[in-house]
Amino acid sequence: MPIYEFRCPRCGKRSEKLCKMGETGETLVCEVCGQSGLQKLVSGFASPGVAGAGPRCSPGCGGNCAGCH
View 1 (cartoon, rainbow, N blue to C red):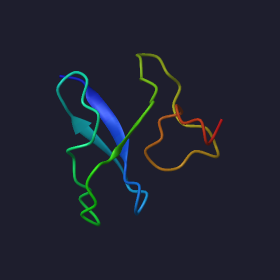
View 2 (view 1 turned 30 degrees about the horizontal axis):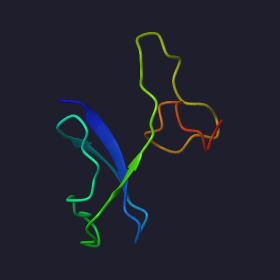
View 3 (view 1 turned 180 degrees about the horizontal axis):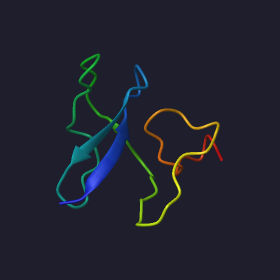
């Protein structure tokens, strides 16, 4: 099963979930505010040999976030 990244439309909390292929997030609930219907995000993947986060990355980024680069 793949790991998908989701964002809560109410509080903005980002989370990763191990889901079945094709999960849309419509049935998922935010662990912070309880909002249902999380938004599925397009996320990069890490591969062996990736150097890591850049100087402007937020914690846990891993160097693959569009907001930092």
